Image (cartoon, rainbow over all chains, first blue to last red; front, side, top):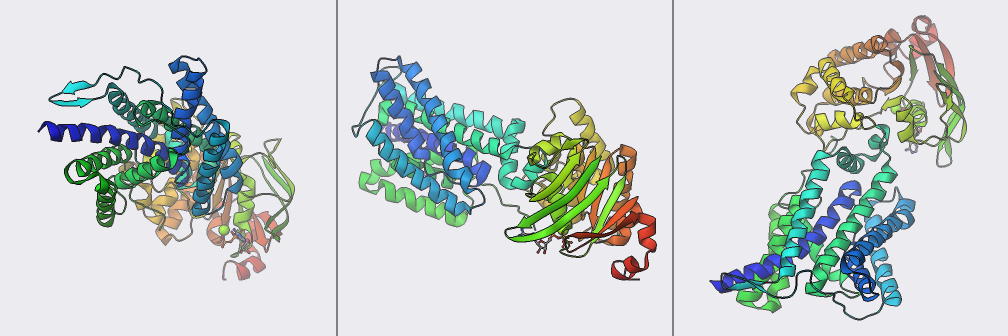
Length: 290
Length: 233
Ligand SMILES: Nc1ncnc2c1ncn2[C@@H]1O[C@H](COP(=O)(O)OP(=O)(O)OP(=O)(O)O)[C@@H](O)[C@H]1O
Ligand SMILES: [Mg+2]
């Protein structure tokens, strides 16, 4: 029994990381139908900038804040320099632009910083907490709390605020959004800033556990993408549940079968779910114009 | 209230508006009628700012609009109900209406929504349903109601009767007529020339990107050429 609990706790920790990355996808996707493959790079930047600011002598909270703001600014720059000029291009082209941007950000990070793996101290120490014979790191609780908090904020944003609805309206019908007075360029800028900030916050939270380096973004983006697809792209609830489910699934496969099969098992389950429910578990049904 | 002079617009290299002159006075209902492809929709898109203008000027309530971005024209009181309704299909009826009043956050938003529900009771019944599930006529009502939520002083209506059953067409034209009582000036674009001229004060006839005739609606309805070309009489 403690074994099962241990696998579950590790799974939830990893799952919360995936959920954080997946949550970052939702805003840009909701504003523009674009899956932003540079999302993993935002996570990486959050960790890297925090590490170097902290190493330069800044206190950790301040270093984290700087990292989040700087990453949000990079997100805005990505929108202004690469996405906005290509407006009107098909969504697939925009997605390819984000892949290009992720390669660029990875290369630039390697040049500006370095190629080492880095870690900064966990927020509440490294002393594992004992729960019913299993253990969990205090930092894992920070990650889980972070995922829940961001989920809750996004849920409020999309269902309770006018600007959140304006984001949905912009994706649904950009021309009509302009005709009701929505500045759709501003909505896109805001979406990139928010997604990048969420990604950076994820990086700050997970780095003490997973370490960070210039090339960690790609794997995170793929796992986050898989989680978002599983839960239903664009829905914060889907991102949270999809992430946790994927993490637990991997932990169980690694624990009871073999860690060699954990990625494969996860993908088999995702394919099975998408086969039965193409929109994902909580995906929005498309009710487009007839 | 609205003055258009020498307006030209193009799609790529093909010019489709070749210098349009038109004016609408405050409180009027003015219609632009014309056949398929005449350029009526393009004209309204230029007025609302979602189609670039290559020459000419648009002045609205004394202010030059030609280079003002679309979302700011709504702020100045110029709202459009676009061709094909263009409602937010994934959002509920109520969310569509709330977004119509995107520029406002005061108590009047609620009152305006009640007014919209009074004008179109069916929208109240379906307020919590996804707008994409509405019938064509209901979507048209929603599109008009959403535009009115922006508190426009001038409403641009693009073929509100298109694709509707005759009974709904009559209802929509009644709604257009009722804009006078609300103090909203209307520029109505229609292929249904008879319906449009019946509710309008004045009309313009548009053919392949040019205004070819204009005058009081009653005069146009009586004109032999109009009767032959657009009224099928
Ligand atoms: N997006 C576009 N790209 C290229 N050409 C266009 C586009 N939209 C319209 N046109 C062309 O511009 C001309 C005017 O079209 P417009 O839609 O303004 O006409 P309309 O009078 O509104 O017609 P309808 O009554 O069918 O709505 C037509 O020849 C049309 O083929
Ligand atoms: Mg048209």
